[in-house]
Image (cartoon, rainbow, N blue to C red; front, side, top):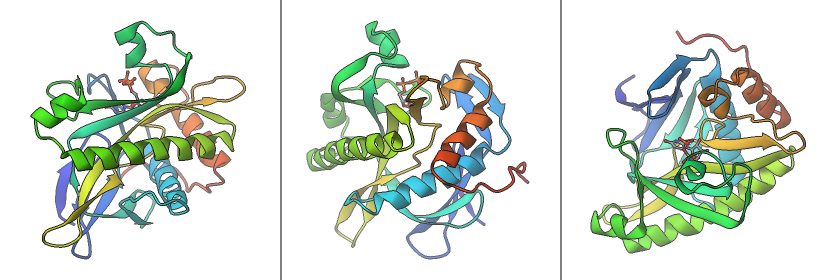
Length: 245
Ligand code: UDP
């Protein structure tokens, strides 16, 4: 398979048909802009299953996305897009960088969902940017930003309900969008990348136990157990969590 791109947690390979790509989920875990690194056996498998299941569930909504189908334990087939270099962060409860930046107390519910934008640039450490930066740097068109914002709030609503059904509180999450070529002249902005406990903060509703990547960031241990717990609550039957070949 032809490798197109390798990121921190995934590899992208050329897909079988034109306009398709294979996303391969690795076991690598990174935090703090890759200053902290480890390999957690099976993480990629669990994230592939969880993300596939969430994107499939999105089919019940009118949220446009890149997911086609899961191909294997670590691979999924997706539509080929040009990723828009903006990370969209949606927050329902204060945690992580917003607490450090603004002095908010972790766990404080925000009065309404908050959208933030970061420049997708590891060298610069993904700095937070405003709509004006996006316009001046020509990262996305005004109409694309309208689509991104509207979809992001719908994803937040959808995920809040989805996780609350399995007794999990959605704290925040990061999503990415891509431009999908519809014809030579036109493209559509669609949800891309992954939705998994690597890029959502998820707390048990009763105990507030952290079930997401903060277990790795904060050295809490038990990451694979927590991710498996989420998969289990989603009624996913996980395969054996074998190491990567
Ligand atoms: N996030 C992510 N990738 C990033 C930065 C953040 O997936 O490069 C996710 C993170 O897992 C959390 C949300 O976005 O669910 C908000 O992250 P935050 O800005 O608090 O950054 P952190 O302090 O986690 O680096």
